[in-house]
Length: 472
Image: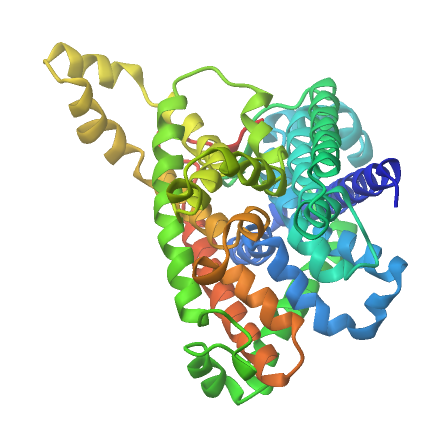
């Protein structure tokens, strides 16, 4: 496949995923905003796929689709479906959190506006910047979801991501890999330009938002369908963890081993230890840098590292490693340092709005009383902004644990991470390997469920930041 075809395929996957996610998420968001007691539970279910790594969603869908993935059209459709499954709930939450104030809607109704006119002329123009920013995020994630394309494409679908890895690691053609990486970066910048033209602005993720003044039948039907799809996919993982291999107990105990016929270089537990170690380093760095940047002006460029594929970053790190000492290039520190590059924007988007909304009067009063800069941060800002900081730490931790692209370049041998080991287990025949992979995936999903459920208690009126946003 030529470079232009790869670019078009990647752009089509990204744009189709973003557009379909927006078209589904928008009406579902109205339904979500009309819920009362079930809103927190439904929000949690919808957001779980968004915080899971893309490769894990691919691993969950792969056994469900089976041999049908041998068709390139089925594989392409499944990739887009997986992206929509991951991100439509996120768009719904964004829509629900950016509802038009109730008094404006009621005033428009008193003036005779119908429900359609209310949404088209009043609500949609006010929500368009938020939806544009959210759509940009979806397009960026979809354009760089290397793990998902590998797990579902299986060679039938090729994108810039997969060809970069093939050229760099299989044929050792670094000039071709570099040119494809340049095309991928151009595609990312194009998405930024498009989002800017649509007026993308900070997008609230956590927060209750205004309740809808009317129910949406279409949104309700789509919402129930999306919730059912999420439960179907994730339920398949739990089902296989129980039924495949040695059963749930046996599969969990086998995680201490290296799979059937010792196909792994290390045990799943050891790989988890590597991932946890990398996670601690990457999250600490990203939180510190995000905190430092949070008082500085940043626009759409804050999302640029997210749009630069981890595969491209891993390729650059691999090339640079040839010009530094082997002790440094072969160190396990390289991977968490690289991961912190694209974790920092995620932490920034949650911390910055809350920190900027903190009342300056409190800080000025403390300074007049002689408080040092360290005391301001340690005794006032950090305790007051504990919830957004915890939310940022939780989401970046999940992102680090599930990172696949850069790790495929930089983690090898005894330094392999959990995603790489899980993918290797899924790629080898045998029910024992499949059972181990599904058991590990089940644990990951349960951790994600706990994180999302915890974040659902971060209310918009419970912190001085009021909005914990995905800024653009």
